[in-house]
Length: 140
Image (tube, rainbow, N blue to C red; front, side):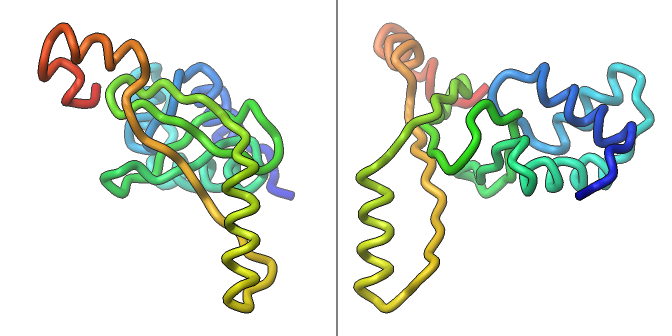
């Protein structure tokens, strides 16, 4: 169990007040803007620890950047994520679970694990794009 330092608590609190997923760099910038002296390496370490303990979700953006958010669901789950506004919906995906176990067993794998996050446009951003072509093309 990791020690609960003031730095880790500051990262946890900042993550709790952030909507959607955020990068370590963006969270670090927000902490500094609020007057925190916490270092970027410490933010990365704290986010990694929070993700490992299940207190934060972690995923890789389509661009390959690690993103984090406070976890509201315990246990294994998946996400639908809007590429434009960042809206995130936690979903159960029983079909994915069955497929992953089946395909692993078919190839002789045991104790298989997986990560599935689906990126797209939410209903609001889809409507915005229909009204204003190009408006939902660039993530905020």
